[in-house]
Image 1 (cartoon, rainbow, N blue to C red):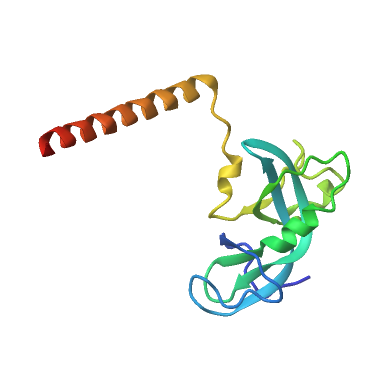
Image 2 (cartoon, rainbow, N blue to C red):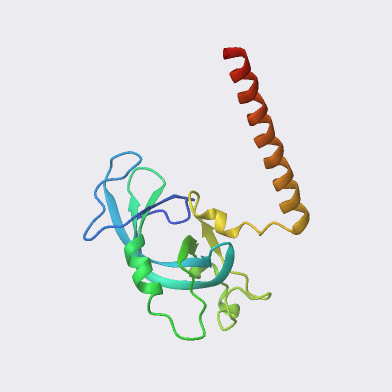
Length: 168
């Protein structure tokens, strides 16, 4: 489906749950236009990254005036609910961006998308949910984070204790 929307432009993603239309753009107030596209969607459960999917849908609404896309989270959740048994679909998702199928060379279209010989041509979205791609902390990083947090907590208690003694 051809679109008048510049899909090569990197966009800020906004998630909303709605029926019908989302209203106007949350950033600039201009009109949003629904467009059927091919999306990359990653899923997770807690901190564990699970499966990712390429899906064609019209759950994206694009602003005519600024680089915003509003994703209908209700529609994405519904689509992910129709999984098959060997898929590991978590309870959280992130629409990573658009998959530009036209960017795949003709001689590679028979190869699986995302493989070593045919990398996924992804136009990434910016905004909330991108933390899904963050790697989990290793043991050393978790220990460092706990130590830093403990130091901050001790410092806060010490400051409150001094304030209480001065006030008495």
